[in-house]
Amino acid sequence: MNKPPTITHEDIVEAWEDRAEDVFVSNMGHAFYLGGQVAGPKDGNPDWRAIREWMDRKEYWPNVWYFSDHGNTELVSIDESGEAHFLGGLV
Image (tube, rainbow, N blue to C red):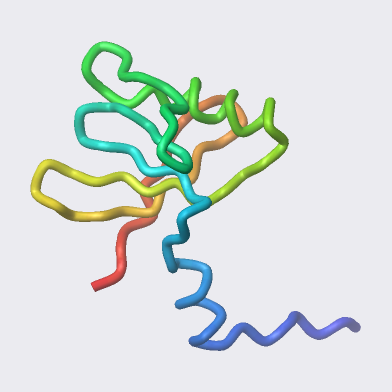
């Protein structure tokens, strides 16, 4: 029987580190990648489906970070249907 890989604390921290190549989403709904806008807001909120469609077109699925109006940062997973799942942030 195959043993699952060991995941270290360092692996988890590295996965949650933001990088310049990530997508950053403001509380106003604007999504940016390397300084360029990926998607604008939809009804005053992030257009998660448009962000996911951009990633699918580019065949590139970076981390997506959401910045609240209080300055909190959360990692977001966007599923294939364009639904956002907030995974929390590191303190």
